[in-house]
Length: 267
Image 1 (tube, rainbow, N blue to C red):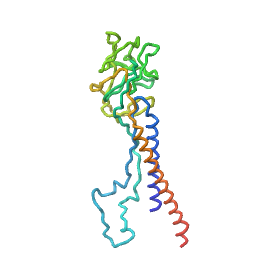
Image 2 (image 1 turned 30 degrees about the horizontal axis):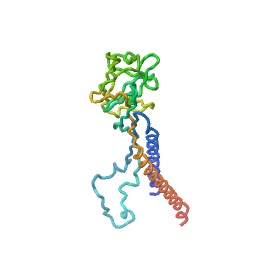
Image 3 (image 1 turned 120 degrees about the horizontal axis):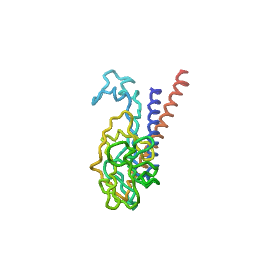
Image 4 (image 1 turned 90 degrees about the vertical axis):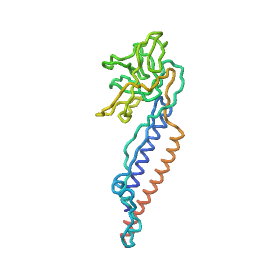
């Protein structure tokens, strides 16, 4: 029992440490434009599968050490990390007054072209490149809606004197020069973070993607991170305390094992 207990506590400590890393990353990106917070997911390994659901098992053997506390397979339970998922809830929209800053309200991602291929982003902090194209702050080309290869869907911009409508149409004066490619991803789990506020499609994932009809583009605004700093700090404190408690449990199990080896063996 002692050996099994220490491994259960150890798996819990590892899980809490992973959760701390996730929370710390969220806090570090509280001011990152368009950032979406992550959540750590855990599950009970093995024990849950062995338990009879919704049944209280009452020992039916004479009083003994085994029947005093029915473990219900808890001595075989471990914490299993299922990874993280990204919370895609809307961040608040703040005014910048910059006509090249664009924010998406609703479910939608800007399409951009990077050296690694097409990627998706909620960070609409754009600029005009020396070649006269609309690009991200990193220099990746912003794409317009249309058919053909991504390289043919870049957006030429001659000046900052432009107007962007709610549906993503870009006007220079009275002339429409392009319509931004704002796409809705049917299953957000199809996306994975790549850094620089970019998302790519997971390998071998059959992703359904359509133009975002319910999203609105706001010119002169940026979407802030959806991280709530108070909420994250509260979770960090709670997780840290859980980690410390598990450390104490590990030390207690280790002490018990030491006594079993060094003292009981002498009897």
